[in-house]
Length: 240
Image 1 (cartoon, rainbow, N blue to C red):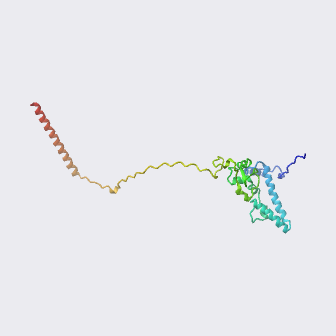
Image 2 (image 1 turned 60 degrees about the vertical axis):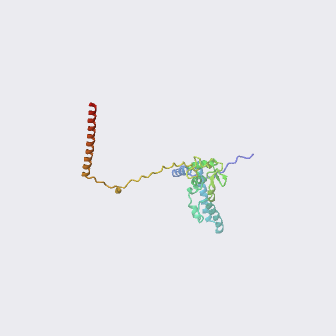
Image 3 (image 1 turned 135 degrees about the horizontal axis):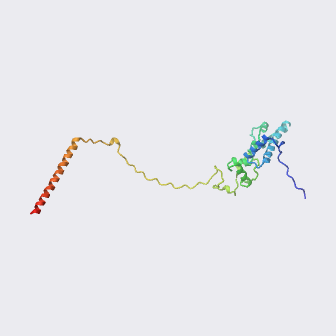
């Protein structure tokens, strides 16, 4: 039997363990990008150091050899969306650790709206809810190529495929809710009131009122006299 194979480190730890500025900066990156520990940050920093070192080494090569290797390096970084198509070696030297962290699979899951937070994105990847080009990926630290961004989606058998899942972030497709029937509006009955200008004023003179009162008094006096005559005749008849 062979001996147990010890995996090789993929990162270079910092040279000095107690640097206040570096420690504060590392804590910011770990919290902002949802890293598991500082070793993930050191691994991406080592990748960035390798890219810069390769770009500096190309300057010392001959022109023919430099053109070939420079094209390979620029093409790879362009596919990773770290630089543009028209970039040069100087642009590689200007890259920062934040540029590399933005290309992580965990970061892209959040940027494309598949997760609510950076930690939620890591949970989706580790538990197998995310597929890339119809293949399940479980490595949050993988650098995503530019042409693979549109192929990032939920796994077919994942419960996140259901549009009513409570953990689906806002902005994703949600099944439409049934619309409540709108109550019928009551019929409106229009009542047309006469306009003020159409109402004619009736002027009543004092003479007309006095004449009406005199007529009413005459009628009442006649009715009283008729009733008195009837009473008198009735008394006479009773005496006889």
